[in-house]
Length: 520
Image 1: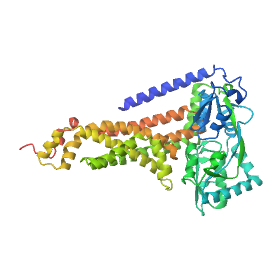
Image 2: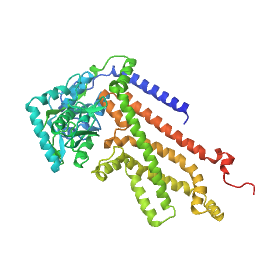
Image 3: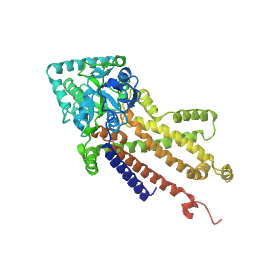
Image 4: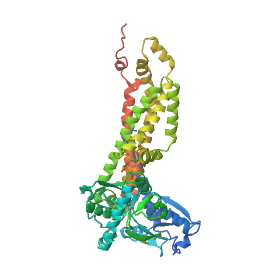
């Protein structure tokens, strides 16, 4: 793909998307409010209504219990949930009252909240059901009781629930000395005001409480961000020491984890979008605001740069090691040993048939459950395995396409087995292999977008984090899409150059005949 084609495709894509934003913005002003006559969540108990909730929260079961006839839709993050109701993908949402109130405070009261709780709840910090976990849970419970009595918890509440959203951490957990060890806290970075990204640092209500606790009790604190539905598995398998992210106490969760003393009491609220709250302003004004919020404010461009680097590192390392692994396995099975080939085919069949996100979670929560390694180690291992399996298959078909007569001719000339393979077979097989390799490389780049499930802040995860702060989908998602496109284009360009270098039709005659006597 040439540079001109790449620029042209990106330009056309941006123009089409910009036009869609203009058209959708113009149409939004003319829409009537379909929920105008709905004043209670009980009226939503009808098959024609769609209710959205965040996956892994307690709100799904509550909706099923209170509104069994309504259609229930699950979303990965709170940002996706709020965006869905604003765009009309769902008719209403069920979420913590404090989160909806915070969202309204930051976005001009876009949601109309129904009176009455769908279900009251209490929030707490979760710990694993181990002796160490129970002991730590007891210490934090004592601390929460203490800050309730001395008024500190009330100050924390006002700090993070402020309309301006100007909450600040009282303790910089990155600088805690930790003489008694370091605690790893599982959380998300997309659930304001309890846990979210601000100035390239995870902050929030829960982080504030735990960091104050760590300072008083002499612990260091490492915050590990992941998707919400991965938090409970992270502490139950020992990957993290505690979890805090707006976690409601339920009887079912008590079977898996220990809960501290509750620090917040509230309830699940139901809300619908209020079209009368839509912001006025032209397209250019909204465009400028979106650009500022996505890249400039809080230096969010640094998060994008960090996410790009992580994605590139995972891709390059996985492609490098996967190519080596695939080649070595192919060489080991090349001679046709029945046992080796049988085991290899079984392993390849399992790997290729397993969704990569499932493989990631198996490696993270089971195989390496008790091992604390670099954040990109597990993704690199997972994608090395899957890419290696693909390389093995491509090599098998590429080498198999070479006429066996050439092998016999090379051996008749006295070439050894390895000389025949590397000097005669492999150069021809590469011309068949590289086009498939390029396609698999693009697939690998796109597949890395799921690493956010296991607490890795790659490019896609950074886009989610930024969306959780801006509550806008357009620029974060389009920016992520274009960056993936450019990364893929650069890697394909490199492989194309290699392909041209080894193409016999494009090589000079002297290079092709190098080492061969032509004057005999």
